[in-house]
Structure formats: structure tokens, C-alpha cells
Image (tube, rainbow, N blue to C red; front, side, top):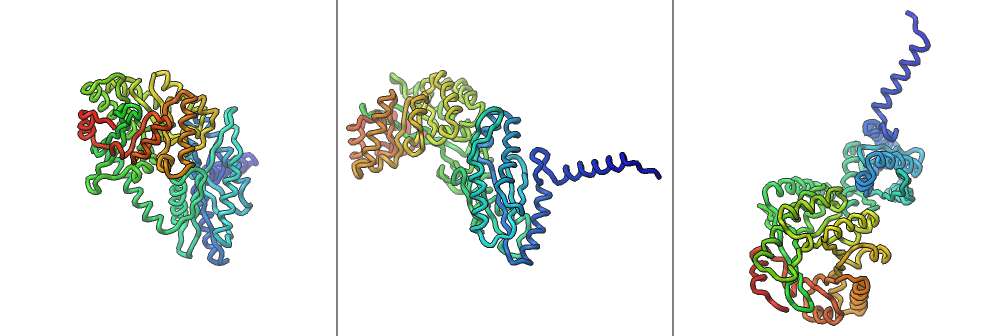
Length: 452
């Protein structure tokens, strides 16, 4: 048999290509999951012999979806390639970084004397991500949420370690961007409860288990109801009424907040239109609806809102969309563009929880917002500490100078109400007036036409 040099070269090239396809991520050239798990298994055997620990970092990019949705998939791919380079540059020579899928990366840390050594590496990774990335000619800022799991005993398997690191990463993500969380066994029970809630949430929409309660918004000058805030509730068939704090975070993380938010918009507008027909006043009462971070990132949010307006025949000028300060400042320029579209449709915009985030006054001046909502934490201090009173007064003065209205949240006492009226606050809500009410009780309150 005659074997030529070209035959050998072709065979070697084919073998190399097969190895790349089998063990390397095509986009970033990093090890893929298969190669990572193999190296992790070998590392765990070595740790047992050397009496040291191995660690796994599970990294998920914060705000990657925003880049992908706003700049396109090509930009997302460019960003992933650059992130891979940054990660490699931040690690020790003996560490392995791999891409699992999408915007998820894992890092194998070997020969660790302690958890503190692993955390130092994780912090170094976080610092490496602080410099902006250059993507399709634009500066892009991303950070990562990081979960860390350590090989605690000889029985730990590669799958166990990666799973535990992922569980810790989800805990980190829930706490906010650029957070590092170390796994502890109690997280498994919490993760199981979370996955169960996610499954139940998916069915809840199909089974019409959600409902809206409405909290009145009071004109502090007239003492009358001039609007409502729609607040979602979950009537669970076994657990009863589930507070929003227990399920909104899971809905946000999983993306279920998008269909849920669509339902909230449509239901709030339908109810608002019905009340306007039955209890007409001039100017008409407005309906406030909260927009979540995940909803605000959706390209089709404007279409979702306009479809709901068409479906319910609710007037655009009677709708107020509430967006938190921190959500707007994640990407101020994109927020500004979206807000301009809404204002062009004559929809009102509210900055919720004002004073708890980090708005730049220059952006506040540019945002086409007509209402600032003072956070309850500041209202609580009215009449008790000079700092809270000064902050509320300053927010009201700032809003007036920019031609905006001010709503105070969480009014619970007559003293707070009197102070807010003295300061010139326009509108208030809170348990002093009424707790959030189911539709029939809210309508009964509306029919009484109370004054405060």
C-alpha cells in the first residue's frame, strides 16, 4: 500500500477538526462542557491525593440579553469572544475556563488551599470585566454573576460541583449584578423550592390564578381619588394568596414576567375603561401599571402596550407606566429612546422608588418623565428625622423645577399627610387612605367618592 504525505496530512487535519468539534466551543475556541467535565474529574482525583481543594466558578453575564436584543446576534457573538479572552487573561495558568452555552461560562480552579483563594480569583474576574467592551463600534458594559462551589469531600462528582456552582450563581443573580455567592447545602432546598415555584407559575397563567388589586392614588390638594395603581396578586389553589415578593423575582429571572406583564397591562386597562364609563370625571382618572426590568428590555414592549390599548379601547393619555430608577439607569440611552416613543403616544411615565437608585441629574432632565414617586423609606421618616424631611422636600422642589409631579408612597399617618401637603406634594398613596383592594371593593370605594 502506498501512503502519500498528502494522505497523512489530510488524515491529521480531519482528526484535528474532529477533536475541535468534540472538545472545543466553535465560537470562542474555549473548552466545551465535555472537555471541562473531563478535566474536572481528573482534578477531583488529584485533590484527593494532594489533600487540597478544587473549585468551580459558574459565571452568567449580566445584561447580555440587552446587548443581543438591541445590537443584534453578531454583536452578541463578538462580545462572547471578547469575554472569553478577558476570562483567560484573568485566570492562573493552571485554571481552565470553558463555555457551557449562551452567555454561561465555567472555571475550574485547582490546588486551592481555601475558599478565600477561590474568591480572590473570582474578584479578579469581576475586575477584568469592568473595562468596557468594543462591540460593533460601540462601548458596551457587562458584568457577571458568579457562583462558587468547592470540593468538600471525596464523594463529590463533577456534575455535583457544577450543579452546586450554578445554584449559587442564581442566588448571586437574585442579589444584583456583579455579585459572588458561595454555595452552601441549604441552597439545594431553596433551589428546589424555586424550581417548583417556576413550574407552578407557568401553570398559573393558564389557569387564571392571577388577579389585580388596585390602590387609590389621592390628590393631596383635593383629597379625592384621581387614579389607581394596579398590583398583581397570585391566588394559589393550595397556598392561598402569594405575596408578590415571593414570585415576582422568579418570574423576572425566568422570563415569565413578560406574558404576566402583558396580562396585567390588558386587565388593568380593561378595568380602568370600565370604571371610566361608570364613574366619569374630568379629567379622567389614570391607571398606573408597573413595568419590570425584563419587560423594559423587550423590543416589542411598545407593540405590547399599543395592542393592549387597542384591545381594551383605553385612552393612551389615561395610562401611566411606572419604571424604577435603577432599571432606567442600566442603559440610559436605550431608556431615553423608549420613553420618547411612549411620550409620543401621549402615555405618561413615572420614575418609581425615586431616591433609591443613582439617577444622574443630567439624565433626569432629559428623560420625558412627568411624575417622580418618592420611596416609602423616605416618607416613613417624615416628622421623625430631619434628613428624610429634607430629602422629600428636595425631591419635590427638584420635580417642580423640571415641570414634574410628585407622588409619595407609603403614607400611613395623618402627620405624614400633613407634612407632605405643607411641602407641596401633589399626590399620595398608602394604607392611611386604603390598602390595595380587589376590583369589587375598589369600585365600592369609588362609588362612595370619599375625601381625605
